[in-house]
Amino acid sequence: MTMPIAPVILCVRNQTRGTVLCSRATLARSFRDRNRGLLGRRQLNPDEGMLIEAASFLPVMWMHTFLMTFPIDIVFLGRGNVVMKIQASLKPWRLSAIVFGARKAIELSAGVAIEAKTAVGDFISLKKV
Image (cartoon, rainbow, N blue to C red; front, side, top):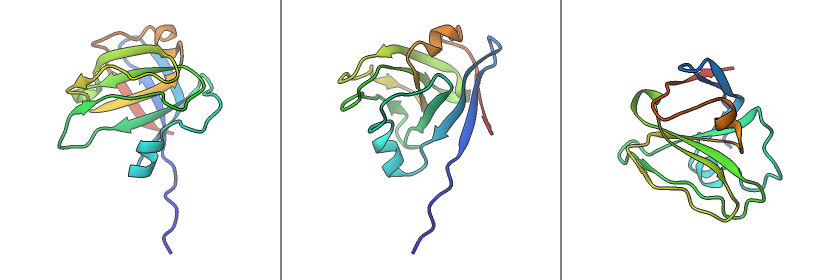
């Protein structure tokens, strides 16, 4: 029997603006976690989020909100954790843009990216809590 993998919790900071996007982002470590994402949750608190990494051989990402009941912000990061695209307030049952070159995506509570003044080109730090 295998032991469950302990969750990795990260603080996500916009170093360029000096703001916090999320103080408790869960790293989706397994294939199952990445596929499930935020599905089954009723809400996402402003200090919560999820970090999903692209497959190393294919730097392209897109996300969806199928089966979700609340909107989310998605911040797509490229090399060096630089913001490539922000999908603000993506409503339930929608697809995000396809972002070529994206290496990571951070799913956040709707409105958080704008509140943290995050913009394309900003540097985002990810620190274990």
